[in-house]
Length: 567
Image (tube, one colour):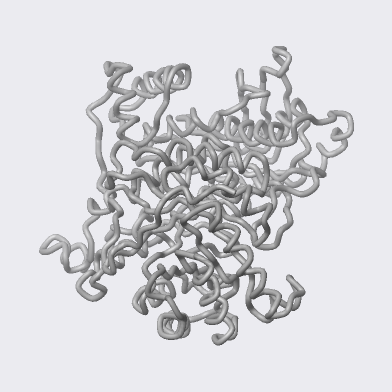
């Protein structure tokens, strides 16, 4: 048995730790699956943002999850990245069910980090005990003690979560928490797993824990809330007001079902209302919008325009009365300045005469680390774009960089696409793809619109076992010359179960995301769809074209319904 790797330290009483679970709970949102490279990129951005703890994943979910967590621990978890507000790297955390196998696997994944943490969860509510665990109170208590003791022999920093704490009997909850503190737990996370509680109720739960759990003064109490009733941020803040000093959150509030507590909302609530709360965080708020955009692009989860803090309309004023007030004093209708969260629009003095070095430096400043062929490809696309646009913005650069990183493994690559459409006649598309064997194959197809026709032509060539779930197209910037950003989600057909889910222990249908940006929306849509299919083929490993051939007609019908409305 390995001795504890590092000494655990409790933060000051006026400091709220920000525990980001975008890469674990956030990724459990259907369609938000990330590759190992994308997880590393997001982890780097989270570290630069200043989060205290990165829950890098659920190592037992799959070999790829294990490898991604280990890589994050071995890079982000060893040294602070450039631009990080703290002089120390973040704590790297791995989730584990209350079994020795899961705990050992989690530790093996995070042990290389400077500050590793094992996060164990075990359900405690009557509903979960009876129907999911089929365990008595005594058995739950025994398991909690044994697993925290086992984890403590591996790692000094052990977090324990009584799953569905919001619906657990208070006396039993206090008893379990007291027991795990005795066994060495350093953080007690109180999850409102199904978003059932309301703020006064959740605050009372935390208050009861602070008053009735023996040894509570030696540990950090954490809150983990879900947004099923739209109360995740309100509940988290109520818990913090009652004494919790760690908030478990995700960028943009993504997560299972209705999502998790939003990192940017909690951070800015504590910042804006600092005189009331008297609390601080280590977050560099000026990076919130940038990190939000990165996660949105990587996961394919679009941020609603009316989303607090990071939405496109968060600092927009259309009403004449509001505009008049803003011109007289910004504080009349804004409780924070856009530049505080990095929402100010930065226009670059860059164009077709800008060099590769300046281009690469600016990408690094925006958080995109491209090297070698990827940097060269993005730079060439930048030069083409610069010939078409008068002004190149940060948003344009971020879209170009995101498209390059998203390419990944390309079994099938776009060589050419051409469409014919209009008010009369039938929309027709001709697509030429470079196939895995190097052959160029051309296919034409008819659809209800140009995108549907393109996707149908691609299906005839790729013949992958999938169906289209979602297709969206958005302008990256304003103006008629704006880049178009396309996002596509596809679901694997007949691939069995997907990655293991931490909460209910089973997998679901695998949903893959592809995205691309281009000044031509048809080209962007084509590349995004190919990106999703390539990811699918990587996930499946191999596929039998003949066995899947019969599915093409079924897929075309689905696409006709999905893309028809968008056109």
